[in-house]
Image (cartoon, rainbow, N blue to C red):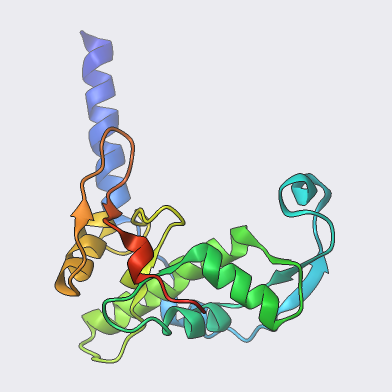
Length: 177
C-alpha cells in the first residue's frame, strides 16, 4: 500500500514538473543566435541509414525559412524540409537530430510571438511527420496542432493506443519544397 502511494505521489510530481518546465533563455533568442550551416561527413554509426557522404548541420533560421513556405491549407513533412536543405547546400543529407531540434526551437519561438499578440508568425502547425502524424513536442501538444489544422480545413484522425493523431489524406495537402 505504501509503495503504491509513493508511486502516485511521484507520478503527480512528475506531471506537475512537466507542465512547469520553461526554458531559461527565450526561444526567440535561441533562434536568432548567429550560426552558419556546416557540412560534415556522415557519422559512422549513421552510415547504414543515411549512407556515406556529407551531412548538413542546418541552423534554426534555415529551418524557419522552409517552415514558412506552406500556405494555409497545405502541409510539409520534416523529411521534405531535410531534403530541401541538403539539396540547397549540396550535401547528401541533413542531420535529422539537429533538424528536429530546430523545428522545435522555431515552433516555440513562433508560439512566443503568438502569445505576445503578433499576427505574422511561422505556421509551425503545418509541419507533420512523414506519415502525417502530429508532433507532440510542439507548443500545446497534438491538441493545439490539431486545433490549428482543423481551422485550416484538415480532418484529424484520432490516435489509437500509442499512435499519435494524424491528418487524414495528408498526401493531398503536401507541398513540394
